[in-house]
Image (cartoon, rainbow, N blue to C red):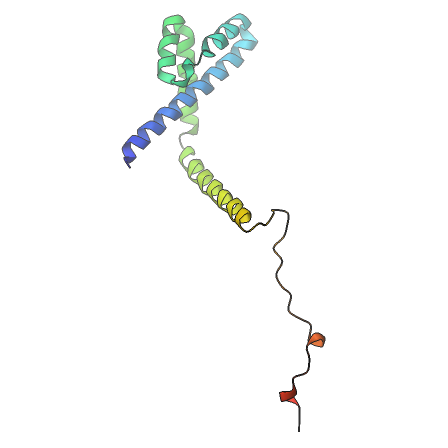
Length: 138
């Protein structure tokens, strides 16, 4: 496994996702201030190009440089805001999700439903025990 390549691919995916979130933010802002431009950007972004954030921005730069700069600014702001706590959130999220998947799997293989509590056998009450003949006093 090439961890450097995994890291590069992950960074590219996060960058593209932040581009997508930045576009959503700008579209929402424009909906309030310039509805026709909001409709244009929404239409431009719905063609599937946004899957690759960098290619999308290149095309947006050619089509509307001002909007492209605005999206890049919002994307940079989002990256700054999440950079500090994202690694810990990812680690914690994966650990919790893995634990939940394992729990669900174990419930399935042992045929327990999540609503059925695991019952522990109760020890018998003393009165239910039969007297032991070996303990009789002489």
